[in-house]
Length: 476
Image 1 (cartoon, helix red, strand yellow):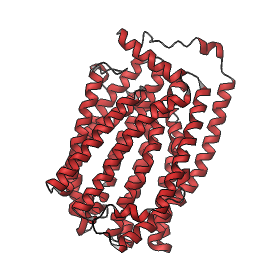
Image 2 (image 1 turned 180 degrees about the horizontal axis):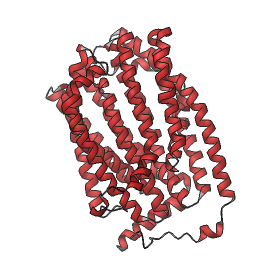
Image 3 (image 1 turned 135 degrees about the horizontal axis):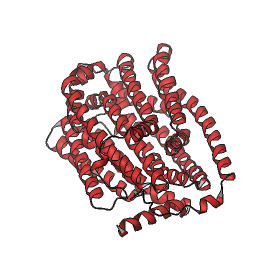
Image 4 (image 1 turned 180 degrees about the vertical axis):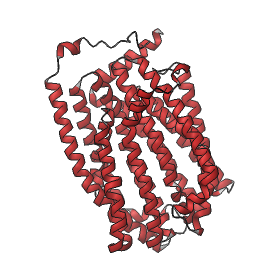
């Protein structure tokens, strides 16, 4: 128990007292490395599928994105919501509530895993056709997705618990989990796809096996006593107040990703109509390239969220403001640099994923990338603002941001613009939605920073001095 207290005190001191710049680097760098490795697997997976099976196989996997994203949205809702509760609870020294949240997470992810597997058994063939697959790619989509859905429980466990580990301030373990998954996935991809010739089924098996390995590592971590929060059987029973808050705080992620799933369904069907299966394959590659460039920014968000949550709970509003400003500067620099890379070298990037790049494919993909990324330099700011509201437990502003881009703007734009601009209208939908969302994010951010400044200026410093970083009786 003394060791547990020492770990908690050390991490609490780091979150509440270490210099903001070094603390953000300490927590973000492992997350960035882990997520880059994880995202690299997606690119390598696409590389092996494109070269070992063909470009149309990439289109088949792209058709499966909406179902995967819906599942990921549910898991991220639980993961982000629980991480916010745990981070704030630890800042308030309420360990009991943190452990209750952990127990509820375990129960919820098993429910999601069972439901996803059942869905895969019954509806998979109908779904891939409904989501825009024609005869040339439907078989690839069904083969891939049916295996992925059976591994949902492992993916859910790994993703949700990774958020919890980061909420504790243990970025190193979070990094290791993603490295284990990413590296193993790359190795298995090479053997299953290129070595054994299993095609898209090999890619799916590689993904599931890598997630199993990650889940086992996280189980070891939580049962080894190194975690600040522990599994307790009595907390597996769902508690209404915790589940309600978890879903509310995590709901922006669900709205954003769920709406993204609907958007991709509409996108795939529109691409099939205006550009055919080749355009679906091109977007499948573009999507993974862009997501790869997002990973460092997501890593920064994951590093700064426990800092924001802990210090907000401890009423150290000056530290909250400092980490927000620093995170915005760093992500904006990164998004600007990657914007120019994507703008200047699209043909080279697209050509890596096929053994025989067709001029039509490269021309189509090059035009699409350059249109989609027009507002990319401002993406880092929007990611940080959304992460900020989640960290503070303020679901409504984050939901507004998610709805603005994915539902109110992007989907209507993808339905209307192609009528007038054909295939180009689909690509221009993205910067249009991003531009308006940027205006909304800026307004909400300015208002929130004013509230933080007001809270700091009116803080009762004598009361804050009484906050002692040590476990409470209720937390034990």
